[in-house]
Image (cartoon, rainbow, N blue to C red; front, side, top):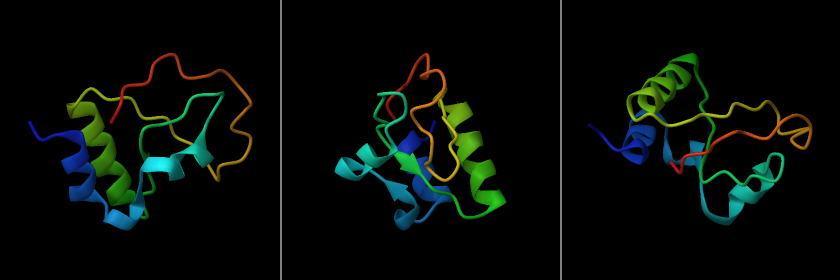
Length: 80
């Protein structure tokens, strides 16, 4: 099985993957994501979802990054 990080790169360009200190901008309900993916096409979204499912990783979709403090925090978060 391909590792999730390798799968992300297979479906997205490096410019569509946010990691490191830049992820703090995407903190949702106090939970800092280990990685943020920004697919630009429907095909890229489908590839990422397939890769996450195959690796049994959780995806937490967001919109434009607003109102991330509203709602229930994710029940679990698996490092990508």
